[in-house]
Amino acid sequence: MTTPWNHRCAQRMQSMKGSAIRELLKLTENPDIISFGGGMPAPEVFPVEAFRAAADRVLAKQGKLALQYSATEGYRPLREWIARKMAQYGIESAPENVLITSGSQQALDLLGKVLINPGDLILTEKPTYLGALQAWRAYQAEFATVPIDNNGIQVDLLEEALTSGPKFMYILPNFHNPGGVTLSLERRHKLIEFSDRYGIPIIEDDPYGELRYEGEHIPPLVVLDAERFKNRHGRGVDDNGYFDGIAPTNGNGRAYMRGNVIYLSTFSKTLAPGLRLAWIVAPVEVIHRCTVAKQGMDLHTATMNQLIAHEILTGGEEGDDFLKGHVRLIREVYRERRDTMLDAMERYFPEGVSWTSPTGGLFLWVTLPEFLDSTELLKMAIEHKVAFVPGDAFHPHGDGHNSLRLNFSYCNPEKINTGIQRLGKVIEQAIEEQSAGTPVLHTAF
Ligand SMILES: Cc1ncc(COP(=O)(O)O)c(C=O)c1O
Image 1: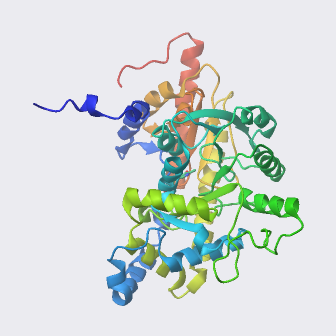
Image 2: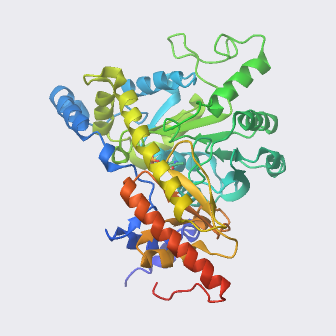
Image 3: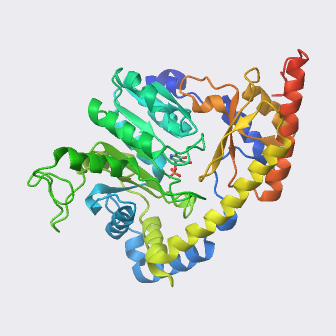
């Protein structure tokens, strides 16, 4: 008797349906199609030579270690390097506050496993990162949303949403995916104030923070949270802002971090996504639980990749400066691509279409006239050999039908120009067809 697999699947699979958009986007693998759909870095900037040399050195010096199982928490020297790097961002953490994960995507899944009970409410921005929705739907989460505008999440609408008792908030403060916007300092303070007042923690997801193309760095939420904690508790607090005698230390006299914010970042956009290397910075209680959850998931992140990354970051001719120089190069390349896309949109997009102007990151967000549906538009666009991701995918409740996300990091400037010209024509045609009363419906897909 053959197994009826559909009946054997766990209930959670019902909330994990494959997306029709993914099926459509598979068509964009055709090399004739210019795709602004994926969130991929420019392959031209991958430091292939640095990887080759670092891999050689690792295998020559530490080959046996690199090929062995290793600690779930991650390779200690890499955790130390990350804690030092976080300090440059103003984030006071010890290596014990750092867990290495197999991409930030795994961090999101781990946090879902650790924090979410079926039916728990999660507060997200609208729109938000699709991968987080996918990860947390598997844990049968429900979603409450607060819209973003050009300055990030609209904090004046937050309080009402918080009274519905979400388990945590999920916030993308820098160069939002998919929105392309950045949360203002004023709103960051407000957000931290609300988190503190209602006792609702924040997951701060920051894969793009280093990819700023202009303007000033804005302190992460985790830093503002630590400052608030320090100010609020005032007396009896040590230099790091922790209660003397309460905050555990790591034995080197350095206090572990405490607070309401869990911070995530990744090497995917600054080194290479193929590494699958990222990290969580959080209070030790969170790190311990995520470590236990990770043991059941993959035992540990690939030892070899961790050692190679650490070697690239510290062991080449530029020593600790490698990443700084490499990120400078990425910024130059992406800034040019962003500018090319924005210029082309000005030239080719018809009236009635608006978009965000990101100061960093990989994406921008387009709003079409209300009467257009971007999933229908994608079908037309693919016929005209250009692609994007329709906006409803980033909305937990499936609204946002007249919006879409464009990626500007992957295609070179020439392709960006051609692709935007094609897309401009498609939008123009769709507007005309709608105005003439012809339904924008194509049956080819
Ligand atoms: C907001 C956000 N979080 C997490 C991720 C996942 O990153 P990683 O490659 O580290 O798994 C991405 C990837 O695009 C992202 O945009």
